[in-house]
Length: 452
Image 1 (cartoon, rainbow, N blue to C red):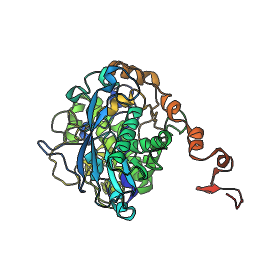
Image 2: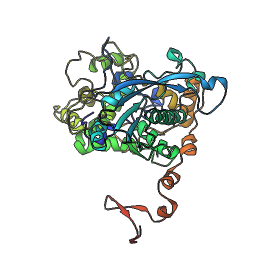
Image 3: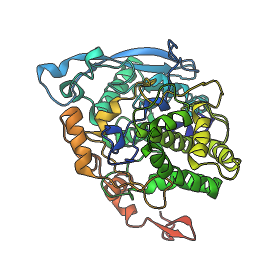
Image 4: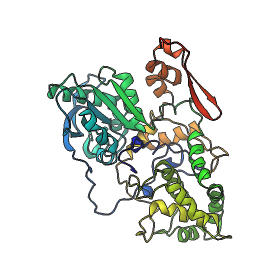
């Protein structure tokens, strides 16, 4: 991440909740939510997994397979990985817990400096708990992704219960049950942190949920808001940049439709092998622009990819420097190359069949079951306008996993906008609290009552 001292380093959210780009593609990844394309997170062959930058000790906790039934299989044990740093901690002091996301926990610990920055002030112990079915925390080992029968134990409720059981056991083993616990998380991890505070208020006294799209379900938030925000980032940097990217999609499609078009696209994108579908190039561009906006930090970053400070502005400078008459596709490719090749060491790009460097593919299952967060692209977006079609999405989930998504389960389990706020604010205060938008600023209006 860009800065180890900023709470924004917890951002990792919407990483895998990307909308459809075209309804004609057969890949599950083109119907929301799609997983991060493999080409966006490349892995150096034979490279060792990076260890956390900070002094964490790795531990493994014997965790129950199923917290909510009492069948014989439910008591099966798997070993859940967690990282711990107790260098600042003293007996009775706080315990700060990071609720792991959809990936290897070492990755998050290496890129979340905020907690290490504040730990000395609070004399806090730091604990990063890996999410079940990610990293090394595989309930069925190499067979964990084998079938829906095994993947059925991968959901947010089981993950929250894992966190609760592990935290309680840790406090008991430390003989420090009075230590207050605060949970932290970013994006999906932030969602889990917020939900953990709601579901287990007796375990955690508070939660810091960064970039957590807890209201991105049902119709609580406008479905186009995410891509509108990404597009606005580029528009703010350069209107020409925004318009070039917006115009590149139709140009790319027209290029591929010509005789020998895919070969021309492959040459333009400097692919290591000729691509088989134009959607590979489309996804490659799409991912670069989205993830660059998401990690648009004011300093150099190395979370998703090595990037310079303010990478969106740098992308737009690349586009704006092109001479008059250059194609939109060539400009868009050059800008996206900043994301994939800031180091300048890549001779070609593997747009297809790249490896999953951080073990993220479990999100496909979660998206096809409970994490149904519809996102669309409006006409104001720099991406091609696209709707969210639940039937098409559910049909692809059925083909891939044999399961039907439950689009209303999260709001049933954790609440929607009003119910979620009322669980945070007492009903009395909720009647007195409202947010009003005025002159493009959000103002918080409270009644003039000195007793509040």
